[in-house]
Image 1: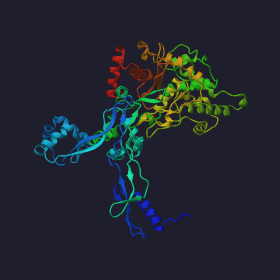
Image 2 (image 1 turned 180 degrees about the vertical axis):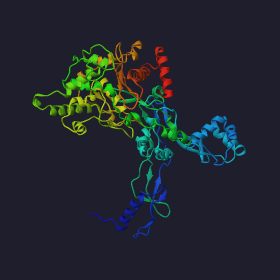
Image 3 (image 1 turned 135 degrees about the vertical axis):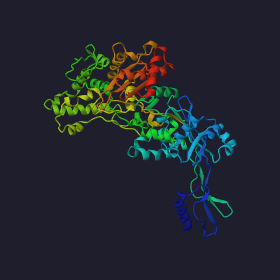
Image 4 (image 1 turned 90 degrees about the vertical axis):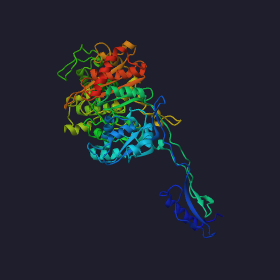
Length: 607
């Protein structure tokens, strides 16, 4: 027969559980409890097994350390007037450097008299210890462990620890208030925080007055070190891509279509990765927060824009699937339907329609899809249009559009594809016609895609219909990526219909194509691509490009979007193909060095 548990043990257990959440390491979790049957007094304790967790590192795809936890030296300057000349001599800085470093550390211009901290090197810290008391009194040198960025590249990917970004959060709330949510981007540091941080180990002994243990009051937990994250990013390619975009507004996403691994992820304007957590960068953060180009906005994940003519690839694939066209379909360049900025030969096939990016051609492709009336709806053209648009959207959503792809970043926008109901409401009638929604045919109007979706779209075509979700971490400790990134996703489009797009995309990069100037044929690389020029009512047009290479065995897919940069062929395509060449060959051919230099110069100046 089972003996009932003594009341005092039940009371003790309840009391212990109640105090567990608020207990401190190595401290009693409650007042001592007396065992009435023996008179013994037990004190429950919670003992830390290891109290110095080491946060995991971030490494790139070649195992170069990008972020680590290291010792930092911080110099606190006095609030009163400071002899900057003496400070410069002490640290080995010239007067310009002293003024610049102090100015960068101030939270706003002219905020003198506030406490300021400057980061020092180990050598500079030693000089302060040795000579400061005599040369510049009242300097305070402290040491602390914090995250160290070994590269300025990849700010939008690497992110920051929340606990180290509190000063930035306070500034952001003050400067941008309602926009603060959009500006926060903790990157992989925030997304994988639990794995990077690890877990303390705890013992839960019951101790008597002599410190002897009498069992435990709760289950012990095992210490777990913070795990390293092996990123998909190629640091050299990332830094190179950032030089191409620099201070322009836009994004570049490059991924391996075979795996979904993101090779480069640029949100421009770019800024150094350490800026948001460094104690002496408050002034720089203020400039970033107030800048009209919003450099802190994580553009590839959070900003959804009309994709322009690159979306003709999706429309063509769906039209083929729905038997609205065939690869040999020809349409006249009828500019009474929609303007066509390219002067070109007749588009007698889908390949030529893509090569010339003929707007009237794709107007008629989409019209064939939307206005098709099945026999079952022979008398109901309104119902047919609704059914066809719904089917078009169903196929388009299978590309991962109008939904989040699930990238391993804290925030991601879903983009947008219109529904029949949306147009019923927007047009205030169910009787809308194709003429009122034709902008869908050229990727404008209500369609919005993110940079991640654009790059993934290129990867899907490269793979002839399937993809792995884009991701930034390829390994967690000794393990692979999160399981969901290893599950292949398939679209609803047959592979043969994707294959029908490839000749046209290759022709885009050949003589007479919209991006023939960006060909890599001189180095033996066949690129498949599609340009886009996105109309913008509020300024210059936006430039877009998607593509992959080599066309017959794709190893890299790239999407580029540059705001107010003009034509996709002249602004976006060159950036994309140079990233492809850099990845596939390791260097840029002499033929394009002048081109490269010009683009990087424009990037520095932000135009």
